[in-house]
Image (cartoon, rainbow, N blue to C red; front, side):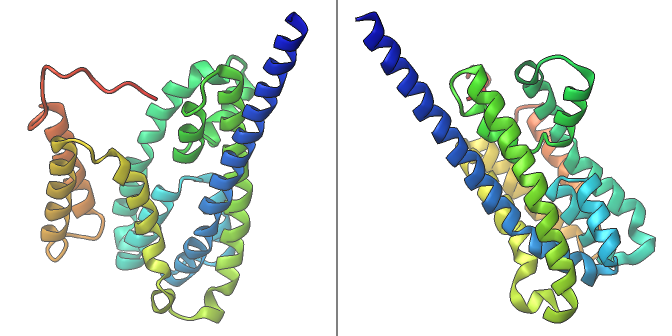
Length: 245
């Protein structure tokens, strides 16, 4: 009887491990695919191939990268401070992810340093969706490293193809990042306050775009979102905070 239980337990563990591999690699491949759009848009915004690749390797957070080249491409060197600020603001969320992943990653300076570089939306999402610590660690590292490798390869491909493709907007590549962000945001729009914050931030950013330097409308919209969330406007104060799942 004990032997049979052991066999079943081993089979379940192997099945769960295979599922994490499928999920992690699937997310990594899907995410890496729109690195092509980043490479092409980066070259079109004024960066060369090597600058684009270095940006992808060192910054390595898609939202910040797209924000940077979007603002830089619209305003040039004059908009560089706004580009940096926009990228940094979007990257702040990774700090919160790091706090969540700290217990999963474990101790060790080099381990934590490596984990900090691959703590992104995708690696965090796959990790916290697993039920036990070993599978969480596997999901985190598999997804994070998979995206890191794939994203940099497709960034290089997109940058090299940029001149051949011509205007990336003609191919719809400028919409790839927005579509990816919407896919990440959509599952969180479950409550009235989340929907209100999203709509208010979008209206503020769109209204200020004709009047402010590129990048500043996004920063103002982010401040609006922070204020609404801080004071819990339109939220139910008696409702418990949603736990990480």
